[in-house]
Image (cartoon, rainbow, N blue to C red; front, side):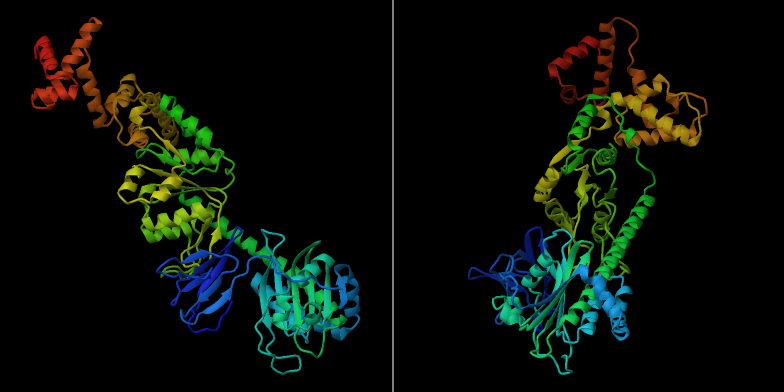
Length: 613
């Protein structure tokens, strides 16, 4: 809504409806804004806040603090009276359209005039352009109209109609300038009558008929012509033409022409809306294709391998959370398969038909990460030469996996928190928000609670993400799964490199199982891939084929292996070797050696005497 006051910024503020709440947002204007509520002034600027939920009875104070622009806030239905019957001049149902068309076609001059006025509607492919063309056509077909307004039905709330546009003719019907009157919203009384009659209506002397209607008295309307916009049997909107001069009232011929305008405008709006939806779908599909091409490998969900007790506990947790909307935070060391678990949650849930999108929060700098997640508008920054959809929009209806969550900058943590709370995003450089339905799954190898204590992670976001935490065990805590994992990777890479391999020898498996695997499953996979590349086709993989760091473990196992004997003799040999190694590690310091072995210094002396060390 344009306001001519030099204290206001070009784009000063906006009002957004979120569910049943209307939110006023100052767009970081120069002079700021405020709300007058219950006699108190609430500032909305850099000193306090940039947005606030509106309440019925508030007064907006915009611009100059000493002499602001004041706008009263009214939330709720207008108190317009119903349109009375005694002064209704005429009405025309959509069923009368064929008859009206025949009458106009019977007059070639009138038919040509109508055709020229309606022709631009078919050439418009943007909904906004169609609405403007409809206004122009209304002024062309209805010379007595001084003002035209269009209301459209909300796509989400079928009982709600919102003003799409309101225009005033530049010159009056007789060629004289129109009175300087601000355009007003279309009257709800007229809208209710059109909806109830399901017909175009014409009424004269509107001020007398609807003297209690604030919208009609405020516009000094003397006659009204309103026609519905039809979509099959549904009314999707209303075109209202007002005559605010005492001379030259609308007549029935105007109503018949307006009926044609409403039919053509509704068709043009539907076509433009369909084209817009196709463009959005095409853009979304293009974004999905680009994202999929960037993924080097499609995840297979039978790759989650493990029969250990630790992995069975993870599977039990997955079964509980898969079909919920809960936010999941997967904790675990690097290489434990966090993304694999996240994708399993998505593809086994009801969101499986939508996108699963993954983003490593540590892979991009802050400004690029914000654009990647939320998208940007053309011109938002130097290289933004076109609009770009963010991963939240691409994943709409699906799942967004945020890896390395602990690396996300604090400023982006605040935006992510808003998405979790409100379900809305704002692309970089945009002034309005978009609604998205995205399930968030995050992963981290950091202790987020410790990060909160150090001030590097928002506490409110921490509690939002930790709705359902899943802890993945490191590979060293599930050693019984190592042979199965190694066999799986061996089969995969043997097929990829077209090599026949009968498998691992038992010594090789023992060495693999004895190693601690600080890189976890990823390190094991890389080791097996290297083994396959250098392996001879048809040969078993021996312990000597392993990397040096793993052969060191094998050598240790060989040295510690006791000679044959009774169980007690073999246990004593192992214990003697362990004590000797501990003494060597601590430079023969018996106090430190005892502490490392978990025994007393006196107990160590007894064992040294027993083994003759």
